[in-house]
Length: 459
Image (cartoon, rainbow, N blue to C red; front, side, top):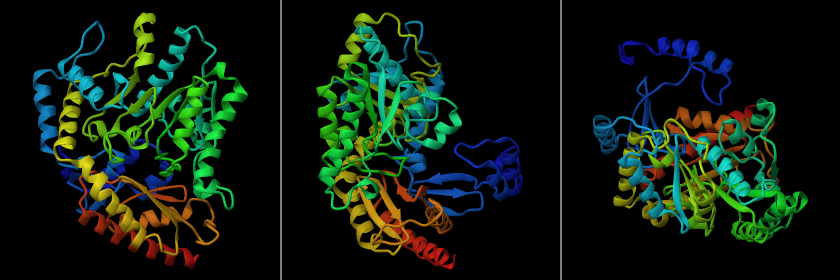
């Protein structure tokens, strides 16, 4: 029996009875009932009631090539017929895993030539944590195992991913994080810059927090600094231009490895294959997932720098780590075709030269001046809209985060899927969006803001 044989109410009751959702208040969800997305095409998703919604989140930061790409379905189908599964254990591999590792190395920043596959960004960050600590142990420095991260960082939902991240709510529910991980201030000038402080000076001050943490622990005890080029789930927090060069200088000065989390930014979102290339960062590891397959299959890839890889190969013996689905042949086949589509259709160049600048210009001209908007910021196809009660003072509505939810709900009700993170509305459109899609999104953002302003004034 297919879902078409069920009413919306029946599906909602089944969902409430058996399905535990991620990052969800289940009592509220079951009272309201889930929105059930049943199909998608191009830039749009559709629910079971036939409502068309422009997807400004690319699913969950991942559907870069858009929905309904038959080439990806065909790639999965052909691979399933030939070899639906085999593992990468027992000194075995498959053709698609081998070819994908080579393809990723060919587009990666210089010096990142090894790839370890998993199924999610969380798994990739788990692997990165283990690998970095193992590297220092192999180098005869097992005490060099502290990781420095940032407040409001998001590095996944596993025990290690939650510990690496800086989400206090997640830490509270974990009941004890992985030890020797510390968090410092985030480069979020909108809220943390001092009165009169320039972006340049703020970026240096935020980077200095990392240096202070290294010195407090002792450089001989610090393994790595981990950071997203742009803090995505934390609210599309784009650091000042001074920040990453200073972070890199600090890491090199104290021989601290630089771990870059590009689960959101990888594979074209910032106008290059990787944000490391956009921002001039030279990391030791890069974690990726999401857009590697445009979400059509679950797959992650940890890119490993030559320094770490050489030690692992020459001194490491067996690396006691891996997953059943590491290098899954079907997921890898889809990833290969997905990268072909991104490249052949010039999606990255279009985001860099045409649609990214157009999105930035339209948001500034049409949205930034709204009474509820304290700031608009963009990089490539990432965008954030800060929701405030008062523009001049940047005062927020109370309770924290409540106003952005009102904006989000109006946006979705009017056919635009956006996300509220704290007091920030965020966007990560599919790379295949046209200028017409951007115009439509701005129309619906302005409408949502107007309706939210009416509701918030009424309270």
